[in-house]
Image (cartoon, rainbow, N blue to C red):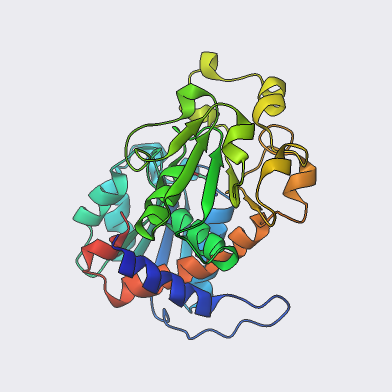
Length: 304
Ligand code: NCD
């Protein structure tokens, strides 16, 4: 996605951000539209925020639970798409364990229908990348100077891939990958990031620290680290954050495993912006769906 598209989406999202405690007044930009949420992997934040985002903009939503649907009776994903399309669904929000599913559905869908990637394989989670970028921008607006440390299972994390793609497009250059060496990828978009197996080195002077869940579902049992040893080495605690920049913020895409990648004192502490990420996620998804349904044939913006 071009940097200008990212900037426009984030500016629109910022306008749609809820003010805590105030009723949300949104333009019903999606009135008359129908959104289907097709989730083939577990999700709390992403699915609920897409649903709330669609409803706040006036769309109706239908939830599809893979285990309880006709897919379990052998129906193909394409037939599921055509079936829901025949009911008038014009936007599909899709999460799937395999890469390429969203692009394939977008290719099969009618021209007026849009497909949004809500996390696919281990490489793509574009709306998460956008909400993480918005969260960083709101705390550290000078992106060219910001130092971002990403800690943990980066190689299996579509969150890290999408966040670094968006941040790099907006000019972030100081990105540190921190964790066991086998979890620190070298391919794009990480080619210019620095790598640190010692947490202390990676966190030195960092303005933003993003902890990641260990993606056990994407690794063999033998690769899974012992949780206590991992926490001792890479788990974020107040003590270990002492070398970060003053005013550093701590992020986590969720779901969190407290006591593994992050201590409760940090997750709930003054540096944590984890719940802001969740709030920003609804606004980002509103901005994305609004853009897609206004420009459904704009493949660049399909976010697949
Ligand atoms: C992430 C995902 O599904 O990729 N969660 C999310 O969308 N907030 C990260 C994870 O599962 O660890």
